[in-house]
Image (cartoon, rainbow, N blue to C red):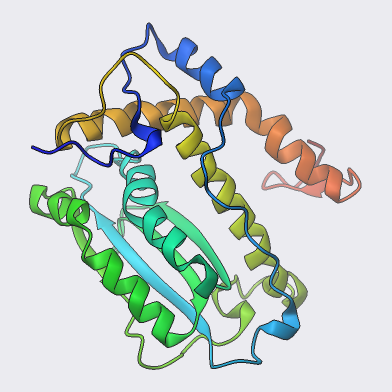
Amino acid sequence: METYRSEPWFTGMCHRLGLLVWLTAALWGCASSGVTPPSPVPEKAIGEASPVGWWYARFAINWPEGAEPSWYLDPLLAHQVIAPVLQHHRDELKLWRFHRRAARDQAGHQFSFIFYAGPDAARRVFTALQADPLLGELKQRGLVLQSACDEPDTVTRPNLEDTSDRHWPLSVQRSWPYYIQGVSEMWLNLIAEIASQPTSGKPPAGLDELLHFYEQLNRVITQLWRQEGHHAFLHHLNALFGYEPLMVRERRPMNF
């Protein structure tokens, strides 16, 4: 089987002495991943050109009864399938983000790529995603059950707030897409940074090795979230709002 994606982020595999060594390298690693930071989208620019709207590409992931969700497939899809398409069509997408979820309901484990663009751009993005050979192999293996894209003929979600939670104030609904794009961009960059750390191993040579690679990568990201999320993410988000406490689910004030 051919070697998967010989880009720089696959210069190494995961033959390190342990997770802590890899985690340290991920935290203090060097080179940039090459994922370009998003450009601000002025409100005036949205809605002046051809009609734009929100579009979904959804990936239904196999989740057998009694098993844990295969969370590592989300970063694999984001990095290997979606990121190349995102890079190629970035100028056509005014806003974009990822969505992850897993619940024992009709949707099950689902990973989504959501973006704000015109119908023609949506059609090009969907065509590129569906043609990806790795996605086809994941389907053939039964790991991805289905990949479904919106029909790009008609814009049905034209407003900035159309994919936000309706329980939020309108100002939050319309501002939130910018916030979650930044979060998604950082998550994708984090995946690329960790994947690009040099090791003595060879690039994954087949699907089984690729799955093992992203399973370990997902563990590193989880450990980073547990150790660094309080300060790197929540504390600095709290700082933007003047360190004011907020009401959490326990309904008590909390600072980060």
